[in-house]
Structures are given as structure tokens and as C-alpha cells.
Length: 293
Image (cartoon, rainbow, N blue to C red; front, side):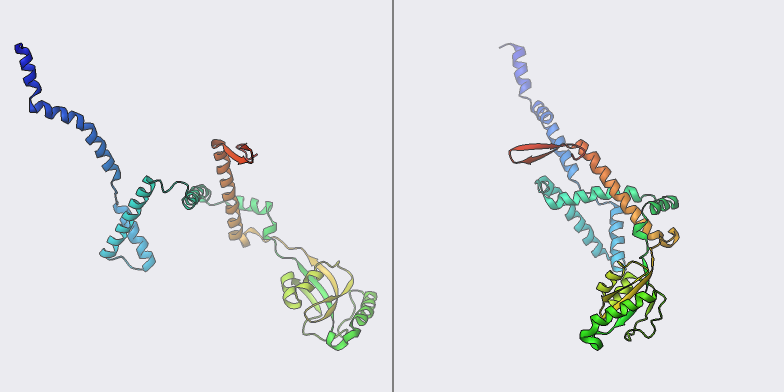
């Protein structure tokens, strides 16, 4: 064997060369595992610890002890470790609870964009002008009533009511009814009363019949919790919309709720453009378009 061949064989047997080669081969492996360990690190920042302490203080009206704070940090670390391990095991896949929670968080982000800046007076007034009915006060009714006591009149009640109704219709709405009919601890003349108030005094059935009466004539008999009544409806006042200054909190609440609904509708409309939806039915699959049709 030549001298150069012998030299090369001696060079390959050198331990130093073996060490260098092993190092070159292992370097990417160590580098890769080092990155994994760095990615697995759980960092508990000073800001997060302060937030834990503040939340504890709001709940218990005192600062946590060092042992309690250590327990809070440990519980947070367990949360993070468990969440990471669960995701690594695929436990977050096809879980309806997790899916709904993620949806909720996404919707919260969309809704927060609405409440980032408070509405102006002009916006609220425009909303009130366009949607007055939810803020309109209840209608009010003014009527007169003549009571007929079924305990006193017995079987003659219907006949007495028909005869008295004919008499009152002839006299009209200005008839003197002070001594007409039977006594009752309720005024004969009701100047203004809302439907709910009428129902509380006379009963719901009576109230529902009174609000359907046509003003300007005597009607009846109408049954109540007390007995029978002849009723003259002489005024019906439609509910009014209060000024914005009197109902601003309610208007703002409804305005923001509508804006949040619009924000969610816009969000899902844009998402439908990104995610084709295939709905399987019997024997075929239907592709739902982005606009929901």
C-alpha cells in the first residue's frame, strides 16, 4: 500500500475527526429539540400576576397572601399546560362546547367594535324617530261605567241591563249616572286609565272589551270581576313618544343592540363568502351560496 493510502487510513481513525462528524450530524437535531423546548416554555409575566392579584382583591376585598398568590399562579400554569396538552392530543376537535365558546369570543370581538365609541345625540334621535313604537307610552282610556250587581239582581240582571242600556243610549254620554245602577267602590267616571290599570281594577276580560269599544255610545253589559257594567267610552288617547332626554338610556340600549346584530350579520355574511357550505340531503349534496340562498 502506498504511503498516501496509509496516511488516509490513519486520518479516518482519528477520534477528533469522529467527534467533529458526530457533532455536525447532531447539531440540527439538538437545534430542533431546543426550539421545541423553548416553544413549550410557559411565561408568567409580572403583568399577569398583578392582574390575578387585582381580580382576587375585587372578589375578596383584600390583597392575596403570598401563599394565595402562589396558588393563583400555579392554577394559571395548570390551565395553560392542560390546554396545550389537550390541543396536542386533538381534544379540541369536534367539541361542541369549545366550538361554541370560540364562536362566542369571535362574536364578542365583532360586538366590541360597535361599543368602542358611544352614539351621538343625533344618531339616537334618528333611531328614535325611525323606531318610535317600542318607546311609546301605553294608550289611555276615559270612560263612564254603571254597575249592576248580580247578587242583588239575580236572574233579572240581563233584563235590567237591557232596559237600562236603552235608557242611557237615549240620554247620551252626558247622562247623570250618579244614582243609576248599584253601588261599587270604584268611580263611575274614569278620566284616564291605561290598559294595565283597567285590568287591575276590573279584570283582564273587562279591559280587553273596553279597549275595543267605539267612542261615543253606551255599550254592554260587560262582565268584570265584580259583575256587569254598562260602559260609555268617550276618549281614547294614543300613546305618545317621550322626548329623547327622558328615555335616553332605553334608546341607547336598543340602538346598540341593533348595531350589534348588524355587526354579527355583516361578520357572517363575509365569512359565508370565504367558506363554501355543502348541505347533504337524501341522495344529493347541495352547495349553499355565500348569501345563504
